[in-house]
Length: 310
Image (cartoon, rainbow, N blue to C red; front, side, top):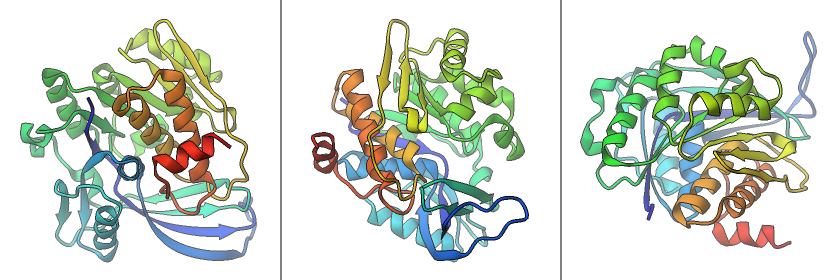
């Protein structure tokens, strides 16, 4: 039974700017509200698990700046174990500027800082996996994630890999195609969005792209695509599972994919639910997040089940 999930990946502070619509090139828009939230795809996913009652722990590097201090405080407040969160003296914490339109659409600008990508593989130890039942990563950064995944293989700990950003963005921040390939080969389950699959295969149809990737990397549990208003798709050797999107009025879609992944890990790995039920639960968690401001869900398992029963 899965009780404790370890995540290695993004630890970010989000400066969220709310406006009527996303401005076009050379355009203008009035900021109606400006807020600071703790975020980061990996952290958001772990917070989702913690809200659902799962032991969650994060490995990442942050700075000792005000953003890093707030990130740690919020992570603890949200129920995630921070014992492996490393603080870099005089470091700059990764942070983003998120522009959110009234319809929930958003655009993200990222300042990587000088901490998150400087976690080295040599800093990874086998003891980090003590008591861990599942390892999750968004490969921010890649080398320590690969090192941990290799240790997981020796201990039969399942590895879940989410490519949150397209390959060209990952290349920009120092993650090579070879490292992405190595991580794919070590994974038991892979998740990404439509842009992620396109960036990996150069195939526009995401279902076809998923099949191509799965044939190349036949992961034990298959591949999943989160496709926004088209729901989500899980392909494995003998199955095709579709989760339809819930009808909502979106407020902020930031972090929806992270909440989906957390909901899936909870329902499928922790609760042992069948794939269809797990996908539906995950889609409901993502939908709830879209009705809330900020990148992290404010709901527990009971609230998700009540939402599904509407």
